[in-house]
Image 1 (cartoon, rainbow, N blue to C red):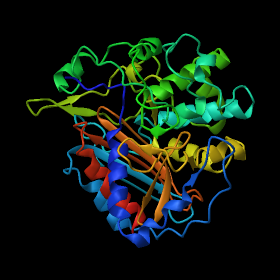
Image 2 (cartoon, rainbow, N blue to C red; image 1 turned 30 degrees about the vertical axis):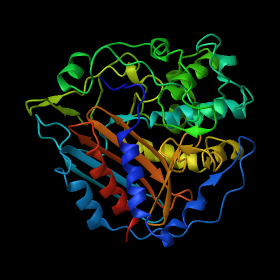
Image 3 (cartoon, one colour; image 1 turned 90 degrees about the horizontal axis):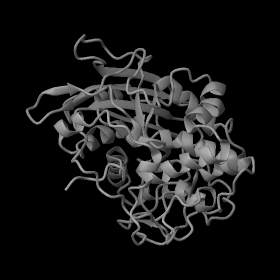
Image 4 (tube, rainbow, N blue to C red; image 1 turned 135 degrees about the vertical axis):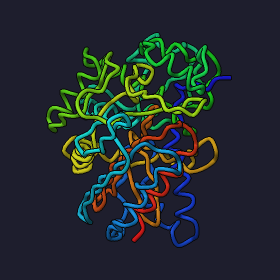
Length: 403
């Protein structure tokens, strides 16, 4: 039975959550969790106490963490660290296996679900402009799109992954088989075709009562942006975020399956062990929630602007640092970890906010302490899309937060 790729329970995000469980074990470290504010769906609370200073950069540990290309097998990796507590940039492996060219900081890559941070920022901007209320059911903005039997699902519930939508129907082919994935990598999807995969079944849970990371929530939010602005969501992101910030190497590819300009190639291991270049790949199956392209410099600039309050007024920005109420748990019973557009982890007593992302051949993450003592943008290129990615994510996250 083929997995539903539209559910997008990101392997990287799961890996980082696993790293948290290891790194925060013990009562002394667990005390760092309250820095993640929680609230009802009403006005966000005031920020919590000031975070502790981050440790100095451990460059040998960082270099070793990104330099291990065998656990799991990677073709390349790069890490940009910045913030008031120190700066460093390093790479390992190659951008292109054919030429052997090393990765350069100008190289772009697919950022996967980091796209959601851009979408959430635009939605919160529209809320600040009073063009929508976060408490309004999305059905009011997108009438007839979801089954009529569904209860009201608010915009905030979509942002926080507390919608409770049922799992999408499976595709007619199994994307876990690499050869099948290669055959279907140029398939074209539309957002309405993606939404049509939501069955007219019972909700998984009442909206707002649990949390489950789902890409379909952000497909609906991107459609909401288009309904409110009358423009393609990629054009809106470009006009509101990319152009004002000078993010010249970041884009929403639309119908173009290629990555233009200097970039890192992605590879996928076939069943016979051969590596296949899958850089050219139609991203429409990740429409609205995982299709963007960027590089480490642009992502660091975006993260800096976002956390510094350049993009959102204080009230809307606070939404990004506010978790659902304490009684709202993930489906596995663990504490909720997704806010309106970001996710949070605590490693070695250091609380980080940001987002992970993945596409075939690419994994990425951007995280920072709220006071920007430490910011990090990570990209690496696994040849399999599975739980082994946790090894790379965890060791790099550990190197970032340990002295």
